[in-house]
Image (tube, rainbow, N blue to C red):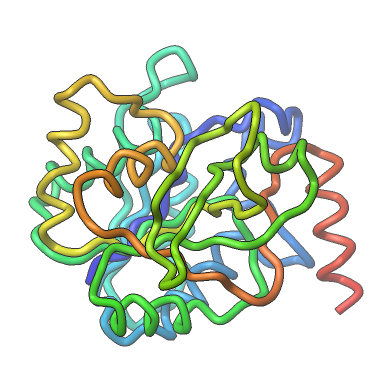
Length: 245
């Protein structure tokens, strides 16, 4: 299995914090966000390579980080050659860029580089293995504005996704998907098909919203917290939470 961290965004909402520093390398309680993610990825023995997708601006920052990060698996830093929000590839576009550039023919774990969480990632992987199907990560949320900012999910009694919509104005359930996904080897081969059909390359939730109509996709409901750091206010709040622990 290959693990992919999506970190090619420019995080303009976090300026000036991210003017000269990628969001994934901002410290939370004196530790870069990405290190919290990688620590959890390392608990999944099946992962044999970590791929971090960056951009032209922050590629040197991640290259330096990878040289200093000690890990049990190979770390590859990819430059998607974009320079700002006007020419970015989008999350699904970057996923396809990694698959195509590295010739990935394997299962993939895909995670946003700006989510910091308190659950055990290996539990997500174990559920994926037990279902033997593509899997998304979800949690019940009861704040309507928060639901509107995320992918909204409906599942059947077995946890199979029956409806998924990215950033809906009128959410149909209180189940929201977070930016963590596990895709089977045969699914990796159709990411390009999704893009070739003209589907949205931007937010990562658009792909599973399309995918569940093609093949079974299951949702894993996690226990714990997952923080999406998008503004200076949310960054400060999460930093304070982790310092207090």
